Image (cartoon, rainbow, N blue to C red; front, top):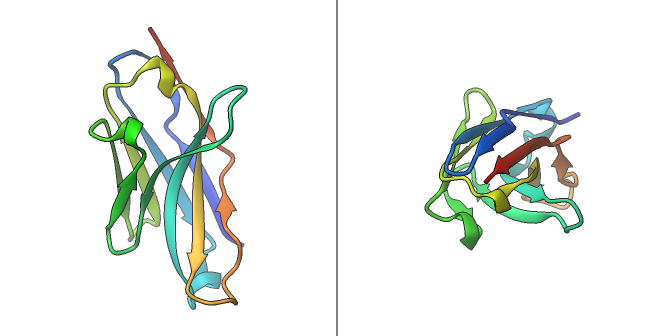
Length: 123
């Protein structure tokens, strides 16, 4: 069973930085599937929104509001994805979730989510 464990959240002042980590385990069951990993966030009273995505080949995508400030990266040897967040703004305050999405065949399982890590940015 795939498990995702996020870490690195915390409280910072505006303009500060944080680095989130998402460690994936139990990936043996995905050996016939490819997968991508992504970060989402959910602020109180709002819907969960996409933040960034990285594919196994290193391709990345970001939502417009974080471009130039956030950087997603991965360490395939450690099955870990990172989200470096710089120039943080109060509107970045949210719970950040890691998501692993298998793909490549109808036999590939549904996406997996981590439990989330809280990021609070004060002005």
